[in-house]
Image (cartoon, rainbow, N blue to C red):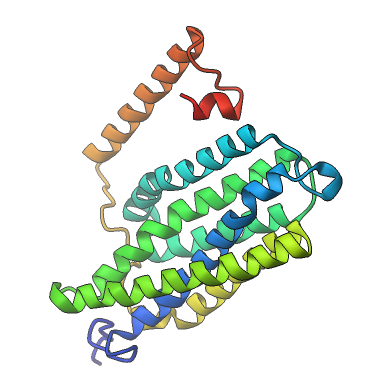
Length: 257
């Protein structure tokens, strides 16, 4: 029996059918991400009497900056986990679940502590999903060249579409009706992405199922380097805290480091 080759199909604008799966998964993930981000600072600065957190503009801006920085920094361990443990496909699935759970937590009124847990879930999930979905898009075009570039252009259309829809509808619902309903709509968007990903993942064949760089002989050089860099960063932060240069116990202090 001939094995299914996802790179040879042409069912999505002349591109592999697997691109359709990744297009809509990323579209809904970006819907949830940018939709939530559109109301994040507004929610934090809204007085508690109006169901916001009642934080100052300075503190809210610092938290927003830390969150967005964390999203991008977490793509590094997210890529490593996929390459060495999960594989890209499972990393996307687990990442989407974490994102959805984070938005659900944000949608439930609670203390600021619960709010930060929700942000951590979303950031961690994005760190897992974002780098690995792009990797599989590239794997759909082993020949490279102009067709691969065109495939990424279609993929980026999904990103832009999801961003536009999220910033429109999540923001409208959050601002005009209720902040937590806005976060809830972001969760629904990610759920839609997960459902269609699960239902259409057969379009991807075997792509991304196995970790690419799993080593049975111990930590790789990249792992050792990552651990060393993390240790150096922690030591630098502890030193700056000790000498009073920064205050790691406040969002503003960390953001100012």
